[in-house]
Image 1 (cartoon, rainbow, N blue to C red):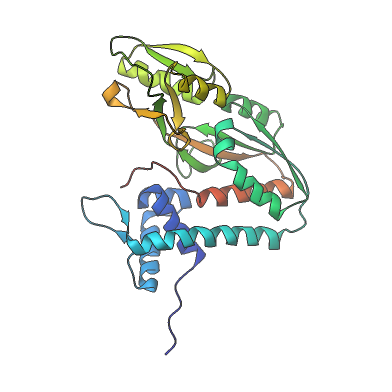
Image 2 (cartoon, rainbow, N blue to C red; image 1 turned 90 degrees about the vertical axis):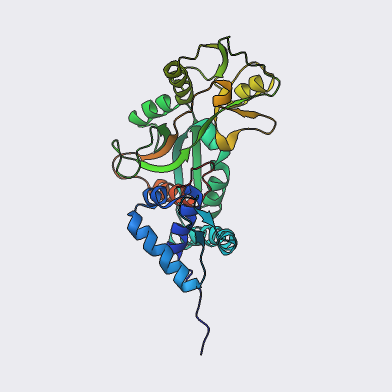
Length: 301
């Protein structure tokens, strides 16, 4: 009797990776655009085909990967990346033209280099014109027709949120500082922030005001590198996505009198009307690539 083949259906693997990265079935269902019951059925099908459990589901405990699930996760990421690259190369090998992309600087720095590099390898005749700016400026330029695609930050809304767009990433925000910074509970909190209209600045000040915590802005810069340099020097505290906290920084929280920060969502907008084929391909590539990326710091359910 032939040995059954493992159920390496890419759709099942994509759902499996989404659950592992988002820490639970509910958030994963939002990310892959399915109901929670459908996601549960997909994982059951995957486990039945493997004859092994990939998640521990003990009541009252966090959802965790089993040892077999840990092994599968690494291979699943590789298979999904290869499938996406093969699809791009085989289905549209001759795409050309220029794609105008707007993106926040920090997202471009942390997540886009490898994503755009894979796209460039699959479509060597496509030129990428990438501009980094604040969300408000990106949306203003998008409204004026300056971009084919734009990535920007907004309040998390999940699938079908108002305003359209496709959610491609969820940022978990944290307070970060240098260990050399001395925080006095009776003094105004020194802040290192980007200028208006930065989303993180808005998050920081609104959270501190709601908590009744006094603050003062001691350093302002539109440059991510400039902000991190000021924090490293011990000038003050800043807000960063959790996955972008540099080595040597410390995370701060309630023990230092700091309130929690709400997440932000990175959304992809496409220009209205008929997009050039190269822009459509890049949009699909970004969405698929970020589906397979790790979402750090997501709370388990």
